[in-house]
Amino acid sequence: MIKAYNNTWVTNLYIRETAAGWVSKNLLTTEQEAQIQKAFPEHFYRPGIFVTIGLFFFASIACSFFAGFLSLFFLDGFSDGAFGIFSIICAIAFLAALEFVIRDRKLFHSGIDNALLYAAVGAVISSFFLIIEGERPWLYCFLSLFILVPALLRYADLLLAAVTYFTAAALIALILTESALGKALLPFAFMIFSFLSYMLVSRSTSIYYHKCQQILEVLSLATLYLAGNYFVVREGNALLNDLPASTQVAFAYLFYFFTAAIPIAYICLGLKKYNRVLFVTGLLALGASIVTYRTYFLQLTISQELTLAGTFLIIVAVLAIRYLKNPKKGISDEPEAKRKFAYLEAIVAAEVLGQAPQENGIQFGEGNFGGGGAGEAY
Image 1 (cartoon, rainbow, N blue to C red):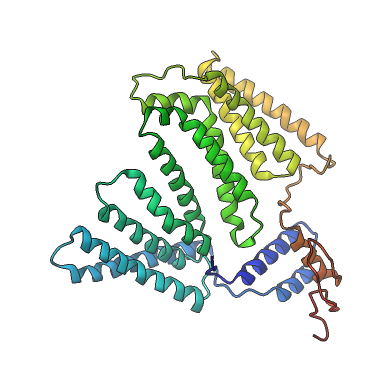
Image 2: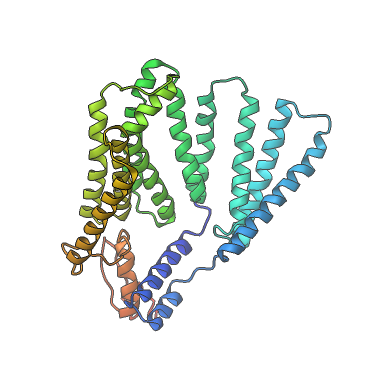
């Protein structure tokens, strides 16, 4: 899939942000950061968060005005077919405007391009609900993925990544809940889907999709845990089968095991692989597991539970901080970014130190500046 944004600039932006983080940790000087800024230029328009929000609302209003103006040509009323044509025309116009502002105005998730992207995708998908009205609900999700997945691969939008994941999950749920057997297998299907999603997403090494990858990893880990959580399975079973109250589910002991084992596995793998996403998700899942067991098994008052939990957490935090004051096996209480793109660190070091490293099969040139031949002469 051809990327909408300049991939070189996206990579350079990541390097510059990495260098800025190193400066805040006193690993680089401001002069060295200035060298990196010069060596890795990017020319995206990226306003502050408040300006971005304002531009997003402005672009959304502009899209609404355009749609309202276009609707004047359909004064005779909207039939299902006419509304489908109207939506397609709007989508084409929004998409053309999106490509223009990205290429000509150098926007990079600056509010306007996000609004145009959501308007274009929404216009196409909304037409499905009228053109194929009366069909099975899962068909809408299935067709929507044909729009969402290419849009995600081209524009790498965070919200679009989350919507795509939930649409795929909804597709599985809608298909399986049409039968009694499917309802029984739904937790296992979600666990398999989440595991495969995480394995697929975590293998990506593209900086272009780095932030989308983080979102999808978190969602995959969360749904994998929730699909095996006893509370979710038990209450979800009652909801799907219209039961007046939740009852014990089949294979209950298996879900007891999943509720306890999955958070522990996340925490252990997070520590072993120095993966902050896995570790933090595991801690949150562990808290949810404690609440689950408390709901069905523990008979303590809220004050007693809070006292015990607070005491336990304080003791664990103090012991962990003291133990990790000096790094043990590469683990420290000092915050550190995930070194997934380690070869970028080698490039930055080359620019600062004037050395030509060779890592991950990357061959650098013989320039005096260490930047692939960008020395005194080419």
